[in-house]
Amino acid sequence: MRSDGADWLAPSDALRRIIESVRPLETEPRALLAALGCVLGEDVAARADLPPWDNSAMDGFAVRAADVRGASTDAPVVLRVVDDIAAGAFPSRPIGAREAARIMTGAPVPEGADGVVRVEHTDGGRGIGTADGRVSIFQDTDAGKNVRPRGEDVRAGQTVLRAGTVLRAPQLGVAASLGCARLSVHRRPVVAIATSGDELVDVDGFDQVLAGRKIVNGNSYALAAQVAESGMEPRILGIARDTPESLREVIERARGCDALVTSAGISVGEHDHVRAVMEALDTRVEFWRVKIKPGSALAFGRVGALGGIPWFGLPGNPVSTMVTFELFVRPALLRLCGHTRIYAPMVDAVARDPFSARGELMLVPRLRLEAVDGEIRASSTGAQGSGVGSSMAAADALGILSAGTEVRPGDRIRAVVLGGAPLVEEAWF
Image 1 (cartoon, helix red, strand yellow):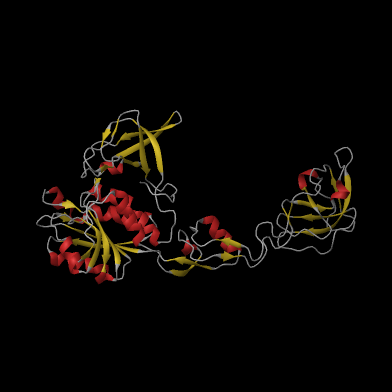
Image 2 (tube, one colour):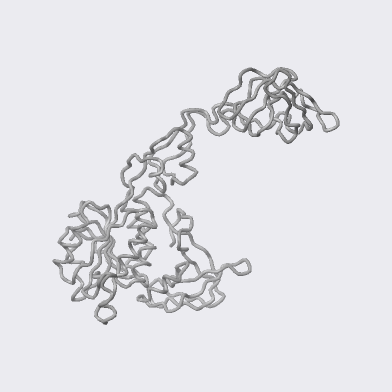
């Protein structure tokens, strides 16, 4: 196994090494709706003006402003209606002096007209479609208004969507209006998930849990959900037994995937075989442990035998697994997708409970947030042991306490917000 020997890294150093080691995946063409949530791989420029013609912003009557100024209820201006332009239709003739055209929203404004009087400022017209059609204008407030000019939204040749843009509903709507049936986007990673332990069974083996012989493999489901929440494809490889042979057989199922996440077996106990198996798979390890609690048994590297894909070796305790994924793995996977905003946002909260980061490890307590009297308050979710998975289920955020610091009730505490808050470019450390 190739390694630079790094061990017990500061969390900021570990995160920096991970992020610097990953690059966005290649791009691929996708149909518009299939590109939802993906990251655009190249700039998109307009091939035509939008809108392509001057068009009406109202249902009403296209007029010349000079003809309707001074119109009022007491002194209405009466114009001859010479055209009827529905949405999707085009004017049949220009508008001359003392003339008007009935027009629907979005329809092209006829030549000669420079404003649209909304229908509620008129009598609705009389005899439209006949030689003596007329409309009475009761207000002049729309004189010269309610016309959306050609190219008001986009000019031909203008770059409208930039590479690196996350494609949400508005971006797809714009792309469709530009005539883009497909977009070039960064490929979504397929993330392999493996866990190990003779004590584990899948959910369908819960009868063994009731008998007191096994525990359910919840980590694979939690990790798969975290991967899917990030817009990627999880691939659960299965549960390896506590032997090197079983672990290697499961990990080798990750061939063809873009990243590998393992849970458990990362320490140096008699039944922890991850190090030996990763060595056999020609893995270049960047580091083995991080100064953080929970989650210090965290490793990262690239697996030569699997095409050099990034490997995240996470601890086995459920809280440690989920915390290290949120702080270290999710940002890296988002970078693989082409995202530039890869970090969960931080908030400054007022602590309602005491927290203490003794020793040399950064403490990451699970927090519940609430807004009270214009400030954000943070309280503990309860027991903070690394095996208390319910403490994560109740959490809105993860606190960040530097090593050797204490927080008392009323002090400020930094918190990383969970649950899909808008991402930012700055790291949490």
